[in-house]
Length: 445
Ligand SMILES: Cc1ncc(COP(=O)(O)O)c(C=O)c1O
Image (cartoon, rainbow, N blue to C red; front, side, top):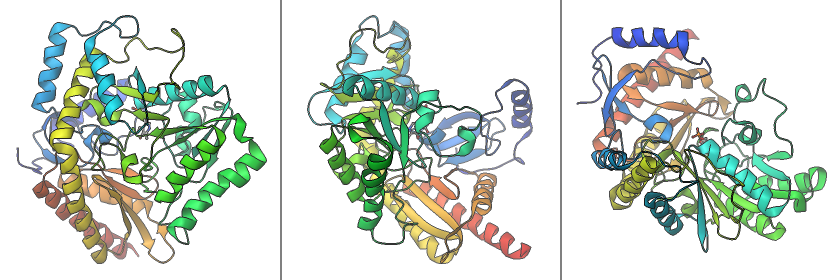
C-alpha cells in the first residue's frame, strides 16, 4: 500500500452502498465526519472498500496505538482466542488479567502499591472511578472541568462538558458534580502561572466557598491534556496545584489518561511530563491496540471495596488482556520513543506552517497528541469552526484521515507507528488543504 492513493470519487461505489444500508439500521447518534468505509489496514495506512488508501492521522480516535492490526498483536489475539475467549475475570481467575495488572502497577503514575479494576471502555473506567471515589471517601461530590470528556453513560456524562449535544435531552444528570474552567494558555490573557492560578482559585475561592465544602468532595477528575475539548495542554503549575489542593483536603485525584496515555505523548503517560501522580488513573483507548478494554487503577488502600461492590461480565476479557500485554511490550520497545521523535518532527512542521497560514492561531501538544487551533483573526482569536471543518473535508478528499477537537481545533492523533516520511506526507496535505480553504474564504468575501 502506498499512501495516500485516491482512485475513486469519495465515497466510492462500494462505500456508498454500505453507507446507505447503515443509514437504515444503525443509530443516527454516531458522528461520521466523512464517508470512510474501511476494508483493511496496515500500520498508519488504511484501505477502504473501493481500494483507496488513506494516511491515518486519527487512529480510530486515538486507539490504534500500534497501528492497524500489528502482526504481534494479531498473533497474541489469535493465540489467546485459541485457548479460551472468555471466562469472566470477575468470577474466575486467569493469568493474563493478573499479568496485565502487574504490568500496569509498574508503569501507571500512582505512588505505592496499585490495584486494577477491568472494564471495557473509557466510560466504564470513569464509572468505576466515580463509584470507587464515593465508596472510598464516603463523600458525595465530584469536581470536573469545562470542556472535558469522560464518557456518555449517565454518571460519566455528568462530568463530560465538551459539547451541549452530548447532554441535551438526557438530564437530570447525576447530582453533586461541579465544573471549574480548564486552563487554556492560548486563550488566557496572561502568564502560564496566572492561567493555572485562575482555574485553581475558581475551585478554592468559588466552588469551595459558594457550592460545596471540600470535605464533601470525593474526587477531582482531570485530563492531564484535554482531549475532545480541543487538545489543550495545561500549565504544569495547574496540575501540580491540583495535586496540592486534593492532598490538603483528602480529595482523590483521578487522572483520566484514556486519550493521553499509552505512549501517545512520547511518555507512557502524559502525567509524566508534569511530574504528576494520581490516586486513581483511568486508561482505555490505546491500551489494547483496538480491542475493548478500560482500566481503573488505584492506590491499593483506595481500591479496597468488598466482593460484589463492582464488576463487569466482560471486563478484563482474556483476549483484550493478551492484546494489551503485547501492546505494552511494543510501546516500551519502540513506539513510545517513536511518538516522541516523530511527534517533535510533526510539531516543528506544523509550527513552520503557522508562519504561512494566517488561519493557524495555535499549534500545541506533546508527542503525537497535537492540536492546531484555527482562528479568523489572530488578534481577536475569533474561532474558525467552518474553516476547521472544511480543512478536515479537504484532507479526507486528499487521502488523510483526521478529526476535529473542541470547537475549532484539528487533532493530529496518528498511530504511534507513524514514520517521518508519513508525517511529511501529512504535513504536505495539511498545507494544501489550508491553502485551499484560505483561498475559498477569500473568494467568498
Ligand atoms: C479522556 C477520555 N475519557 C473517557 C473517554 C470515553 O471513552 P470510551 O469512548 O472508550 O467510553 C474518552 C473518549 O473519547 C476520552 O477521550
